[in-house]
Length: 206
Ligand SMILES: [Zn+2]
Image (cartoon, rainbow, N blue to C red; front, top):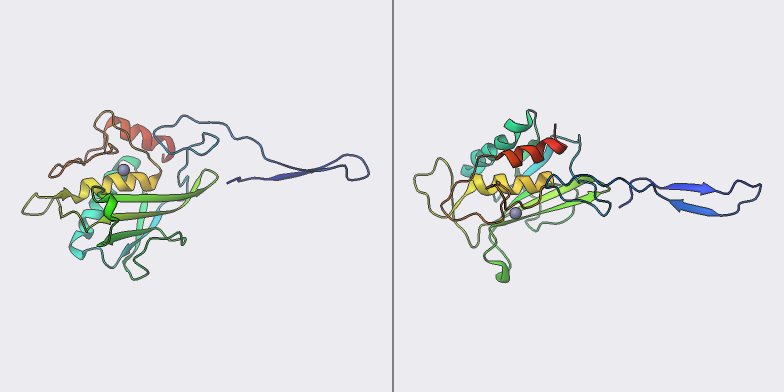
């Protein structure tokens, strides 16, 4: 978890001691980001666009919805945040810490977590995110998109905007109708970033 480690030796002619020490980083304003043990915001910093692999099980007809969700963030950042490098990734369908950031469409989901619409995990070193995995719960939910004829189930753009927020390093925000609010009701669209969301974004992705 330490980004820098300094080894200091004693000043006399003989080695008096070996010190392993790290400067304590300064805590930062949260801006609704996950923070490390030092209170630093964690994000991808300037390592954007974030390379994303879309698993081959993700329905082809829903890829435009994913692209719209990406646009919702990028329109406010003013520069690319995500880059879909593969729309038909055929690696394992079991999310793992493998150095790849993958969007999964899962037909298998934990029986004790059936109310969870999606889940995103992030891995970081220091204050730098290295990997994010986004899972959509396609076992317990059905979805509609902005271009669907019906509007039953979960609005996919809204869900993906929220999960991509987690990919960026954001936490839940239950104030001010944020796209990062914990719960997304069925049939409801929540695709507009609020002032609070834009403010959060600007703290790390200028
Ligand atoms: Zn969430």
